[in-house]
Amino acid sequence: MTTIDTHSKRQPGWKRYAFANHFRNAEDEFDACKLGFWLFLATEILLFAGLFCAYAMYRVKFPEAFAAGSHHLDIRWGGLNTLVLLVSSFTVAMSIRCAQLDNQKWLRINLVITILCAFMFFFIKLTFEYIPKWSHGIRPGVLYSNPFAGHPQEPVWWSVYYGATGIHALHVLIGASLLLWCLYRSLRYKAYGPTHYTMLENSGLYWHLVDVIWIFLFPLLYLIH
Image (cartoon, rainbow, N blue to C red; front, side, top):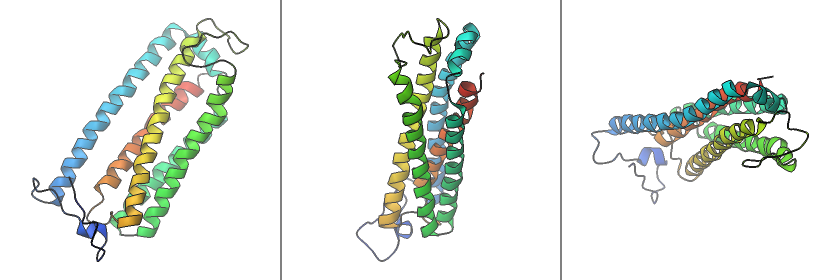
């Protein structure tokens, strides 16, 4: 566990950082943290792999239901959210590069842009996709009867849709929370710089995972028809 003397104001936090005693040096600590986080990301991939397997099984079994359900998704909103996440992946990568170069101003600007993109993604998903569908009775766990229902097994499609996109949206919020914490520590302590940016880089890796998962979800859900 890294420590920073938050009481001293003589130097930025990344210069005052001290690696944990059970590591030989800062490089060993960085490598251990990076490896541990990659292992955590592997478990996240396993989680979404289960969702993708469910998608594949039900799509093979009910192809007409999936085509009918996908027809009611607006590709414009899905495409816009894809663009938003691609931009955010670029800016979070740039924030890490700025930390390596000790460019504190652009580190924070890029973090702010990334966080704004995260909340824009969630706002679009909630306002233009979830709420209109829920207002027509299309919500998880409900067998509905309305003009949207074009196939008797269509509720299976909506269960997969809400399961996959809902868990992904939760990861968006978690990623945004991590980046907000990084922004706070950067503003208050200048915690990230050329010799110490472990948490920032791991948070960036998490955000890239969020982006990659959506790159798969977008065509699987929105481009069936």
